Image 1 (cartoon, rainbow, N blue to C red):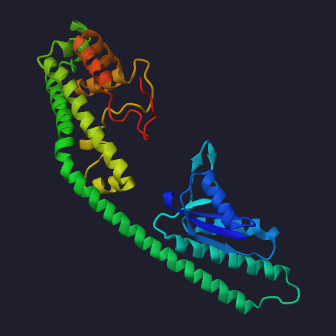
Image 2 (cartoon, one colour; image 1 turned 180 degrees about the vertical axis):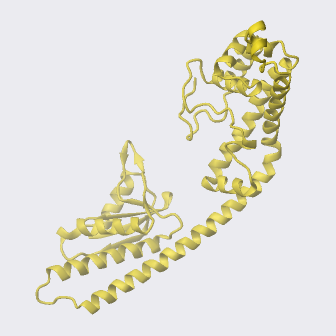
Length: 335
C-alpha cells in the first residue's frame, strides 16, 4: 500500500508505503509531532508488496522533478523522512503527481512482466500524454502563483522600505559621508602626500599623530560613535526586512535602487561572521573607527589604545549587543 497524507503544521505532504496507511500516519505523526489531517489520507493498492519501494521512489522523484523539495523536520535529533514542502501547491495538486507516478510505474511494470496481455503502444502513449498534460498544467499554475506571490511580497517590501529608509538608514549613510569629507580635507592639505624631498627632510608622517593632532580629530571620534549607533539602526533594518520578506527584500531594494547590505555604497559594521580575540564589542568599535578615520585595522587598534573615549564605546557595545549577534545569517560568535 502506497499512501500520502497532509501535514498541516508544516504545509507538507508525506509519501510512504506500508500495510496500513492509517496506522502508519497515526504512529508517524505522534513520533514526529506532526499535525495531520486524517481526512487527507490517500491509499493505493499495488500489484505486489515487493514493488512498493520502487513505486514509492518513483513518487518521490515525480514530486522533486515538479519542484517540490524534501523537508527537514527533526524531533529529538531524529529526522522525519519522506516529507515534501508544498510551497504554493495545494495538497490535492501534489497528490495528482503521486497518483500519476503510481499509475505510470504500474503500467511500465505490467508491460515488462505481463506475457499474456501486453499493453498496446497506443494505450501507453495515450496514458503518458494524459499524465504529462496534467503535470504541465499544474506546473504552469504553480509558476503563475509563484510569480503572483513574488509580485505581492516585493510590493509589500517596497512599501516598507520607503517608509523606514529615511529614518533608519539615511542617518548611517550621512555619517559615513561626513567621515569621507574629513578624510578629503586631510588629504587636500597634503599631509599624507609629501613629496620625496619633504619626506627626506621631515621624515615619513606618522598617520596616528596626523589624525590625533588634526583639527578634525574630535569630530572623527564622535563620528565613530555616530557610525556605531546609526549602523545599529541600519543593521536592524536589514535583518528585519530579510526575516520578513526573505529573497524578496533584496529584489524590492533593487527596484528602488538601494542596497540593504551596502547602503549608500558602503558596508555596515556587521560582526558575528568571524571571531575576534578581543571580542565582538571591540571588533564592532574597531570597524567604526576605521570607517570614521579612513584607517586600516592596525591603525584603528592604535587609536583605540590611545584614547579612553573608545574604551567607553566598547563598554557600551558590550552592554548593548548589536542586532546581528546570534542571528541565523551570522556565525553566532557572541564574545
